[in-house]
Amino acid sequence: MALDTAPKGWRSFARYSMLTIVALFILFPVYTTVIAALKPGNKVLDNPLLPNAFTLDVLKNAWTEGRLGRYLMNTTVVALIITSVQLVTSIASAYAFSFLKFPLKRLVFGIFLSTLLVPLEVTLVINRRTIDSLGWLNSFQGLTVPFIATAFGTFLLRQVFMQIPPDLREAAQMDGLGHWGFMKEVAIPLVRPTLGALGLFSFLASWNQYLWPSLITTEDDMNTVQTGLRHLASSDLDKPNLIMAGTIIAAVPILIVLVVFQKQLVRGLTAGAVKG
Amino acid sequence: MAIKSRRLREIPLAFAMLGPSLLVLLTFVLYPLGKAVWLGQQTCDVQGKNCKSVGWGQYTNVIKSDQFQHALWVTVKFAMITVPIGLVLGVGLAVLADKQLRGMRFFRTIFSSTIATSVAVASLMWLFLLQPSVGVLANLSWLHNIFPVIKEPGLLNDSGTALWSVGISSIWANLGFTFILVTAGLQSVPKEMHESAYVDGAGGWMRFTNVTLPLISPTLLFTTVVLTSRAFQAYGEMDLLTNGGPIPQDSTTTVTYLIYGSSSIIKNNDGLQAAVAVLLFVILLALSALQFRGFGKRVHYGS
Image (cartoon, rainbow over all chains, first blue to last red; front, side, top):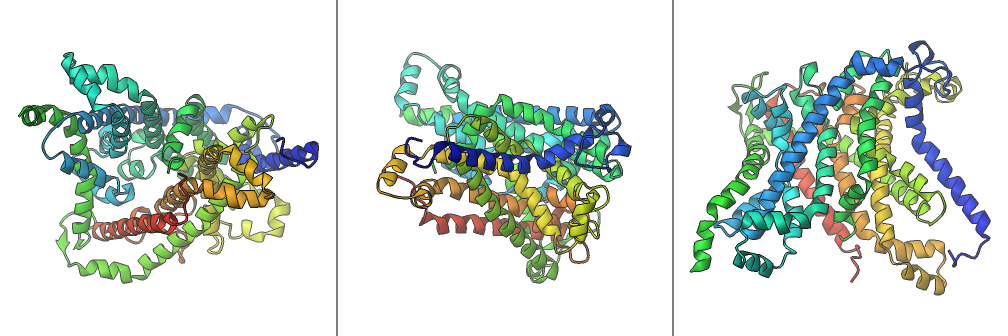
């Protein structure tokens, strides 16, 4: 700022011009999507860069005929189940690793650790067979149960729990505070910010899942937003405005979530990156 | 004495707290890995039932097969397109927006915005741009007069441009993520470092390469690792934009698409799918080990 020697006005003009050009490039696909979704079918293809007609009917159609309403409901249920159960199982296992004494602790910890090395894409071939043999194809159990525990969440929370001095736990015990009380009064308040970031991330990850639901969903009633869009795109390619309207309906909830939870997002993303 | 008894006394509680997680992780992460290794040397009927062992040679057969080698090559090309370009663009955007100017929050929001798109949302937006009959570019006559490939056969249907087109859609979708990470990295660089370099007479580019880049190298390493593993696991883009095609070259059939794709040649062969999945696992493990080792020497973690 004070260090820059070149004429200030010219410099910031150049920067603003660059910023604007780049921003326009990034927003271009969003722009074409939005104006297509707001055009009636007969106007979509003439002049695809200009908003030369306006209707909300296509958005309504996508919601009802395109069944986006149904898909959104399915996805919300799936994402909320996965997120809430994941938080509970992560707190429980992180607490056990941090404050409980039991035999084979290192072995169990090693098992948790090793699961971090296994990418989703490797296990789904077999998980599809497992879910099939449990009779859980096209069901909420199939969409959620494989993801309700995570070693990642366990480690993240354990990291924070380990900052609690062992003396504090000892002292609490002297005062007659059992594990349940200690967890409620000391441990959970301490990890609340981390829980926010973890919760947001599991919500986003489960909301955005694509491969897994497309493997175990064959009935349209069980489609999530992501696989529902796929269904829409394959059956209505001659109605691009309908597909684009569906795309917008699918994107808006996440946009809202991200705006509301901006802080948690940046905190969570940078937790692993900046500290190295 | 007291400690010993506590170790035993807390077993039921530990079991209750760890049991559910352990059950899920064993059933849906570790068992499938082991089972995939075993299934990889078997052959099953089209329903995936009645599997019989055909020998571990099935793995070497897969490795030697043209289809696997082709898919691996496509995957490597896809990573070589998306990772460096995505990283350079992300760093460029972050540097551009790393100034306390009026309205910068607005630009930062736009640059981060693609993080809100799922793979399906991003891919369909790009499908609508690139599709040769109903797509935006194909309906701009001045544009497809200059580049006829946009309409005939279409950027997604031409074996020369398909992978690049999918790559651009993927770069766009990941840009918000990269931008947010690099911006956070830049903000952690102490201002005094820049000032002392400035006093020493270092110009803008010198300060960027000698001060900024080394200091954000942990962030760059992390971002590179994540982008590379995303590239190796990319599936939705191919499924929605190209279906692994265009055929017969299968120009966008990556390893992940080869396993799960609806028009993959092994889609009805659980044994081969498992074998390729196991090979993908080995590749990803080797890749992350390699990245941490190769980068480790050059990454500056500060003191």
